[in-house]
Image (cartoon, rainbow, N blue to C red):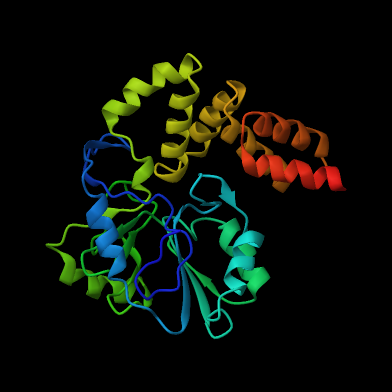
Amino acid sequence: MHLLNKTTTIFLAALLGISISANADDNCPSTIQKNASALLHSYAKKSVDDPNAFTVAGIGNHAYLLDQSLNPVSPEEMAAMVKKSPKADRAKRIVLVWPYSTWGNAPFAHALEKILKKPVLGFTGPLWWYPDGSAFASQAEQATMQAPNEFNVAQCIAPDGKYHERSKCVKLLKGHASASGILANSAFVLSCDEVRKLEPLAQQGDSVANMKLYFFNYFVNIDQDKSSKYLSNAAYAGEPLANYLIARTVFENSPVNMELYRQLLTRAANGGNEKAQRELTKLGDN
C-alpha cells in the first residue's frame, strides 16, 4: 500500500508512469517511454490534502478497483477500509482518483455511495497526473490517449487538492499547457506494436498475452467486447486471475447461479488465487 503525501489514500496499486505519443488511427499509443514511473510517483506525492474529502487513489475503472495482486476490491471491502480511518466521519465526500471511476453507470462508485451514504466523486475518462500534484481527466468520448485540453477536459484535482468539474478545470489547465502529464493506469498501456504482436499469441491460447490484452482493453481502451473475449480466452487457458474475475462477474450479475460461481472459484483457487481460496472457504462455512 502506498500513501500520497498528506492525502488520505488507499491503494496506489502498482501505479506506473508512461509518457505517450498517440497514434490518431488507433486506440493505442504509437510510442511508449517506459521510464516515467519515478516521475509519476513524485507528482502524486505532491497532492495536497483536502480536509473535506476522503481521497482514494489507485488502479481501476468504472467497475473495479484493483489491489496489488490485481484482484478486484469490492465496494463493500473498500467501504470497510474507509470506515476504519479517523477522517472518514469528518469527510463530506469521497473522491475516487483513478481513470473512468465515474464513467457510464459507474457501478463501483454508486455502490460505494450507497454503503457510505456520502457523495462519491470521480473521473469520467482517462486521468493524467502533472508535476505540481494536480490531476486532470479528459472526456471518455475523445481519443483514449489524448491528454486533457480546453476542449476535452472533464474533471480535475487542483494543486490545492480540491476536486472540480469542467468549467473550473479549463481555467486551471491553462497553467499546465507546457507541463508533461503522465497517464494513470499506465501499468496496462500497450503500444500499437505490442498489440499487434500479442494478438496472434492470444488467438493461440497464450494466457499471458490474453491477460495483457484484457487489461489494456478494459482499463485503458475501455472496449467491453474485446476485454471480455480476452478474459474468456485466458480463463479457458487456466489463468487463475481470469477465472476469479469471471467468478466475481457471475456472482454480481447472477447471484442465484452459485454452482457456476463455485466452479470458477475452484479453478481459480486450484491455480493459486488466494482471494478465490478465501471465498471458497466462506462458502464451505455456509
